[in-house]
Image 1 (spheres, one colour):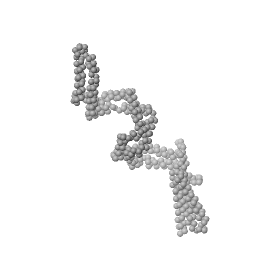
Image 2 (cartoon, one colour):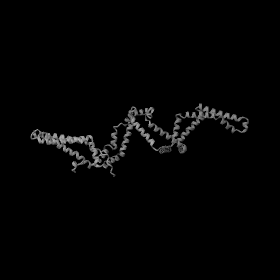
Image 3 (cartoon, rainbow, N blue to C red):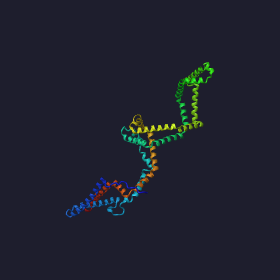
Image 4 (cartoon, rainbow, N blue to C red):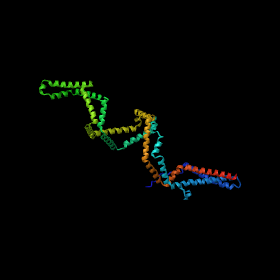
Length: 419
């Protein structure tokens, strides 16, 4: 595997760690100075034996802890003493241990599911949707800008073609005849077809009035010259027009009119054929494919996509306007439902648990491998600096405590020996 370049190296002597290191080293030097001073003046001042005992034990404890802390990260004084520079020599094993820890405690599906049972994501989403205006403004504006930039940055022609192809493919795969038949049958059962039928009758009456002259001309053209001489063609035209006008009026006023009943029966038969007749369904599918292949439909879908794209960009560029008014009320209502409806909240949380647990089961091993490979690719100095930077301050506290505890123990031993 290609060796990765070292990451930006941390400075182990950060302000806090540097100060603690100076304090620990200074305390050790002070213990040494105190020891030698007390030893020099002890003959003249016997009570300095207590000070010497404290300083001597503190110096030993400080030196021991300095050696232990230094041995974790490097060779003390640069000497290749066995079992020192522990972290640089064992970085690969540390990486494996860290990766296994992540896998065992975080990236196993049952563990993830168990931990996520404590999280109520649905309620959190509900509170976010109900948040007063301004609290979620930054997130909303950032997401809106991202959406707008994506739609503006993508190749419009290619993206539009992809959308149209996807829609056309889905429509081609869908059998529209049973859907149309079911919709028509439902409309007939609920009598929702009656307003459309009456509108068609009214349209026929208006069309008859508007084309009365055309009907008379058609009758006159189809009447022989003998009848024309007798003026019968005019009376025939009047009769035809009057009969059709009477028919439309009767159909409009009489729901049980025979012609109207036949039309309704024809609609019911059509609904039945659309749902059950293979020949009718085949004809509808053929018409559907011809319609999708029509160039005018393609141009209409182009215009529809362009309007939708412009609407999305416009709304994303002005998220406050898009989420104002009724849409904002809808989102707030959704938030209230998420927070108060336990059934909906439980369903959403269960879906989230399963989704995250599925991701852990599918990609947990890959994440573990990534962690171990990344640590293995670091050079020894990089990982040493990273760990020392993270815990260096506490390690210097260990040196200070070791010095003071050692001195206290030395003082107790001197007291035991004296008394």
